[in-house]
Amino acid sequence: MPLKLKLHTKPEVPLEADCVCPDRMQSLNMTEIEDLIVFHGNCQVPLKNFFECSGEFDGEIDIEGDLVNVKHIASTMSFGKMTVSGNVGVHIGAAMSGGEIIVEGDASDWVGPEMLGGRITIKGNAGHMVGSGYRGSTMGMQGGEIIVHGNVKNETGHVMRRGLIVVGGDSGDFTGVNMLAGTIIVLGQMGIRAGAGMKRGSIICQTKSELLPTFTRSCDYQPSFLRHYFKHLESLGLIISDSLMNSPFERWCGDSIELNRGEILLYAGK
Image (cartoon, rainbow, N blue to C red; front, side, top):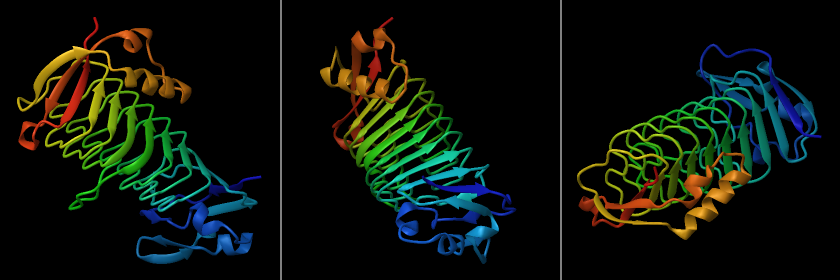
């Protein structure tokens, strides 16, 4: 059975809980898990001060409670599965390289920053900087998948290098800003300045959007690779319309300040 963590005391200030991770909890008995150190503000306290622990670690961790004030859960995770029944705070899955995280509620900012591999699924909405690099970094997400069923805010995929980000709803401004490579799919509306400064990579949007004047319209076409992406998204529980599956897309090349090697595909159907 999975290890179960239930929040019994809501932290008054942000709780840094990077120890809540399969890599940190494997081979530990229950007492050792309960005594793992978390940071409550600037104080070091044991995990049991906030979480009731039960079950037995078998590679899976189930967390229950409103974790909106709990950050760095599953940082550097490399294997296993984690399910969060509730909302979650910032930096979930930071620099993770493998395994799977499922959040049944909403997520705050910085979902999967500088992620290397694995999959993060957010069933609700997410905040700013999904799959992005930290401020000053030239490398964001480098592999894996981030699937957000709801909406996201600004700078999704900032300096993204590889991998896949899917937004089931709307995205905010600067989607794919300074993107180096990889793929971002938005099934709702995109905000302004999508692809600003992008060097390579693909941004695909189900709706028509206003693009920067540094993007040039190339052609209308039906890229065959999109059907494979959409079939994959359907298998993950996202709804893909038949019209989207079979309609052409407008291809825009940009950003011209970076030699027009990136592309934005906008739905061209009626």
